Picture 1 (cartoon, helix red, strand yellow):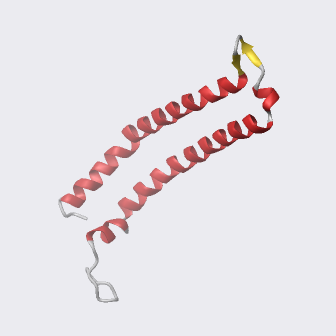
Picture 2: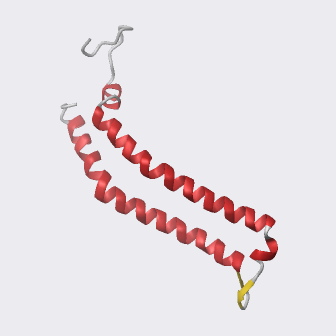
Picture 3: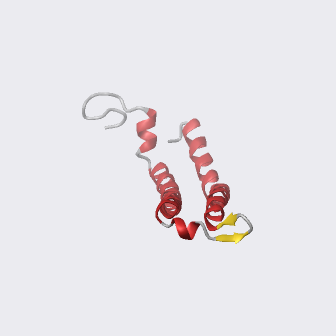
Amino acid sequence: MSDVQASGSAETDYQRVERSEEFQSLRKAFRNFVFPMTALFLVWYLLYALMSTYAHEFMSIRVAGTITVGLIFGLLQFVSTFVITTLYARWANNKFDARAQALREEIEEGEL
């Protein structure tokens, strides 16, 4: 059925690329990295929010001067964001971008 589907409408370039093995593999690799990282961060953030609400005494413990456990956990939210961003950038540079670029070139040259 070349470029015509059973309904009689022509298949778009996007549809052809989307069902290609290369695209599906790339999408799977992206999801396998991003979804666990997102879940991990959301759990970490939810833990911080719940502890701030329900473990007020623990979060109010002074560590040094006016610095409390809650303040440290709050600052660690920023640190974890930077760590996740760095991990993603490193992963994308080493494992993802070259494959995405190769797929893009195939699409632009009409090979896919």
